[in-house]
Image (tube, rainbow, N blue to C red; front, side, top):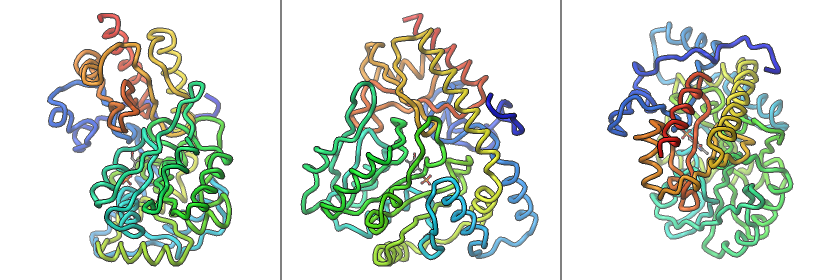
Length: 394
Ligand SMILES: Cc1ncc(COP(=O)(O)O)c(C=O)c1O
């Protein structure tokens, strides 16, 4: 390890008593037991002790009435974005609370388009993008990523061709779940140029912005240029970064006043309340969680190395795509020569691995599986041994 570890990522913590989807709901969702749950994107690590302490302190006060954001809620976010992502001078009033990033982009769809309008997405991509577009009665305009020399890239020519008069916005995934790219500045510049030329709004889902495992630095889309900032809605949260997904708290950063007013008008229709516990968690995480995050990233880089080396040596047919950001490894399982249903069945019933199957993210994900690597190394080791055994028995 490159840094001295103070926090504990090795201990296996029993999540069964917590009604966690990943662990406690296993039987209900899959009909099976004793699986290695490497699917939904949360971590099996204790979140920063600084956050736990802040929550304990607040919960010790026995009144949980209507509560506004603390000073540290906004200050922490603003300082964090400047320090970690070079986004200077975010103003407090640019930030609107939502109970999640998914509700953030759902409200953006409602705010900036009409039923029947088109919204661009870049599959394979986090599946609620498509679901929310369709649930709101809009059309999906697919601009699939392309694979060039074993690496995913955006297809700008196709993007230009796909945008027509009914296309109002693109939902960008940056870093991109599930394929693990951290988009480079050049790539974002090109994307922004097209969005300016075609006059569409950019909804930039940057929930994975802090989970950088490789060498490429995350660039917030809004910081590409003044014009980019004027048409970008940025969605961020402490949920993925600090393992706080159950806190139902996210932030939509909208510098453009007109876009902000439209967003807030859509949000007002849903009468959203702040979540008291989420406020405390965000305040503590952004203000005190950085040392924990550095170690968590180092630990996950170690998991990724173990994962890549294990597969390369023991199951070389499985191809791991370069994981630059997120802790979700995207693995091409074509060599197992199974259709998607069989592949999923094999992973669940033979390998005992509960993964997210590639087709969830679009047909482009056929024959792929997504592995969540944010767990104690010992779990990963047992899961991979179980996979190796199942493959050897084929
Ligand atoms: C790209 C992306 N956006 C949003 C979310 C979920 O956001 P929330 O739980 O805040 O709605 C996830 C969770 O995996 C994600 O990967």
